[in-house]
Image: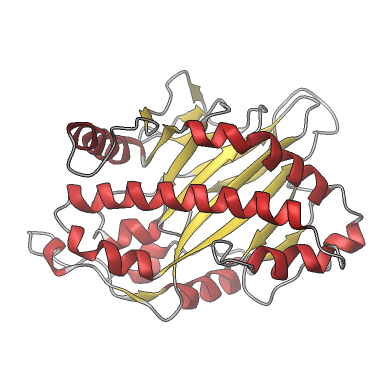
Length: 314
């Protein structure tokens, strides 16, 4: 595999009580966010609230993935990438992806009552609490990004047209050898922004501009923030969505839970006029996120992976 570096993503503290819009602390963190995204396309967030629910979250994930395989396979969807996906010979991972996990009742009705006919209120509330926590943090970070680029007037429109999907993932133990096994191919996310939390097992790596891989070491009170191609396109290329992957080794199971901030279907994602008034002009055409995902999934099934920037390129 490509070389790894001892470098690490910037760590930004979002736990301070003084972090309010207009405060000196807000301005300082806002600058740190932009610098980190321009250099790496992501950063780590110190956010103590996630540590308070961490044990319950990973307990819920174990409960989910310990279900019999036929039961897990009941969780299906006709939308790309949603539902249950089993491990393959190439990728030692299982995942469950839930649509609009931020909407009250969706986890209960769309997941737990399918897998537990009698319901599982405790698990539903745990996953819903995590989703709300991550979504609230994502809104704060995205507001800072928009303020930094002088386009904060779009923040309400953008947030109102965002869905928060959630994916639980279990990475199995490699069967043989000491070499790392691929748990997720190198890819960039297609959403606006991803917030990810992982258990104590290493595995997530992010590629730098120089082509080296940063190993993201887990921490109980950290989120990993990664921007997606939708935000990159919407900002007319001012930020780039980094490639990342998961490798696994050793004899421990790795769990991660991620919240994806996706543009709503039928919402036209269009570059703001304020970002095209320079020498580069408009770089990307308006797109519908769900239409793109359908196209991407169809092409990927043929082995052709079309990035959003290619799809929208003018």
